[in-house]
Image 1 (cartoon, rainbow, N blue to C red):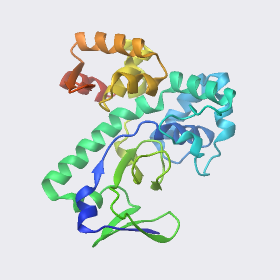
Image 2 (cartoon, rainbow, N blue to C red; image 1 turned 90 degrees about the vertical axis):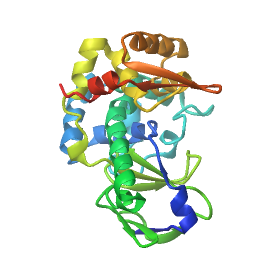
Image 3 (cartoon, rainbow, N blue to C red; image 1 turned 45 degrees about the horizontal axis):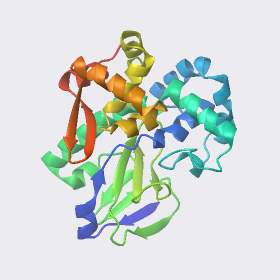
Image 4 (cartoon, rainbow, N blue to C red; image 1 turned 180 degrees about the vertical axis):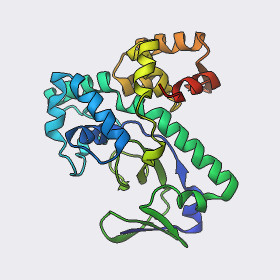
Length: 273
């Protein structure tokens, strides 16, 4: 069990966010072997037959049940100059076809909304205690089971809490992230992966459906392009079409331009089937 010590200052700096690139390695791991989580295993059975042949090296890199290689957990997976060319191609092909970050986006969005409502109604302590059976707040200590034993002090660093779809157990990460992070799997009962991944592509086309799902995380155009391995021009074109359809809204704050779902877009992404 890992004990994360939270001072009153640490407690005040805890925040929550979506980090789509963390889904890549975990989703590949889910393809390697059944996870025992029904919605994810059903997603696995759908995706395996259409897995691009040139993405197979990813399955050789990620072992089922083993720690996810750090090369897949950085902010820009397999974008390092010395990354093997076949793995770079494999990752790009996999993300274009399977788009785990985009598939996970609406689920993570709903989870963040749920946690936000809990923080507002019952406080941060109640929210931290209702993330996962593996995570428990005990006074000023956040206890995480399933990790190596030890005690950790944040020493002024703000803790980021990240819900994920394809992770099957809680984890603590520093590598590849600007802040120390507690990653936890969304309750499988809340995943809703069974049919949502099939209907939107038939309605909008595969890439545009992936863009709509990814917009749920509030990305910039460049972040959206990176997430889906498409060009910024293509990402901008798809966002423009979705904005004209009333599914996406674009907001500018200073020099930053971010996209988000409208209520109509949220209802379409969240609708099963």
